[in-house]
Length: 99
Picture 1 (cartoon, rainbow, N blue to C red):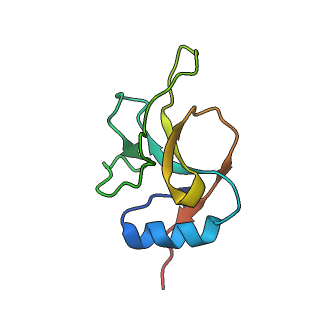
Picture 2 (cartoon, rainbow, N blue to C red; picture 1 turned 90 degrees about the horizontal axis):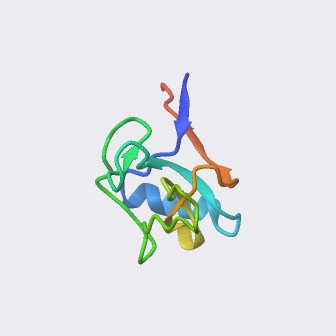
């Protein structure tokens, strides 16, 4: 079985993730815009149909660096925020399973 960074496809998944990470810090999502600025794609190449960005995000704030924030993560209340892809935060993986 292969695994990947978590993909949040809908509100139900978002609510489940929120319960899992409550009070545990920030976590990566499998979402980035590294290839084409402001075109966010999941690690499987699909475009998000559901998002939960924190108000004002993504902002690609470069903090004075040459590159901006191209990777998405979960912050307070499981809202989404863009981060530098080199930031050190937790991660959640998912994998398919057969019944």
